[in-house]
Image (cartoon, rainbow, N blue to C red; front, side):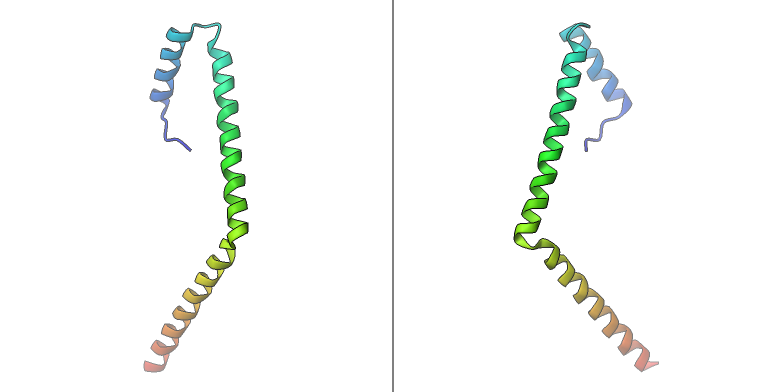
Length: 82
């Protein structure tokens, strides 16, 4: 989801350790992790619900079918010319 490297993660943990202290840091990490999982789950379910409601899957399928049809037509024209 986020493009965070090891160095950035280590830097955030060190700053968190200095600011929050060793007692509160594990609680904060658990809370942030739990919140991130909840946000990701909520976004995913919302995307799925919106996709179902507007029929996005059907639109994608129609577009894919049109691409296949156009490709087969151009392939047919090329074969006739040979």
